[in-house]
Image (cartoon, rainbow, N blue to C red; front, side):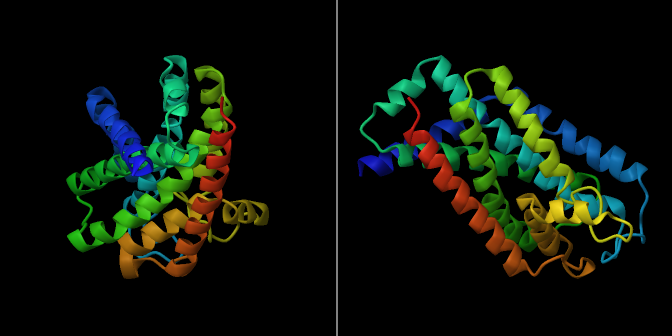
Length: 255
């Protein structure tokens, strides 16, 4: 019971801290809005994307959801550094709960925050005219949550070894950008002429499978998936499990 209470408390703390930061919530609209409205409207590739029957704005919409959750998930690792700076992390580590519960509590809380960010992109999509029915939205939610588990874990793992905000920011950007650009979020991966090394690197990117799964659910028959939905979900779940194991180990070594 103590483990469950500790897990719930940490999870709720992360969610409340996010919801109280209204500036971050409002500013989180800006980046996906710029991508969808300016970039999506300015780049006209309608009819030129293999395996997709629609316009470019519709094509990048699931990718921008993935991008938003990626950047948010990785950024949430900064909470570990803040907690360490203000002494709260020391109090958590000496509490009568396991390091596994501590890690899972922070991970679930931060993942919930990242999913909230993804939901905001859905709101933006509706406002600019992208058709989204309630069933599609409900089907996308669990996929979004699965995507964030592994990404948040990466952020927490990095933060557990970092001693300053500056170091965390550098490493975060170093990982974020390759994951984003190699995922196929803003350009198709099966177009002719794409170098083989780029396709291999993309196949090694876990976000590729998350974006493809989101496109399969959101775009429906208009999209021909790179992999079957079950394969995409299996890769995502496997990635999540590996990151959670590494993350819990990193937290057990934290002093």
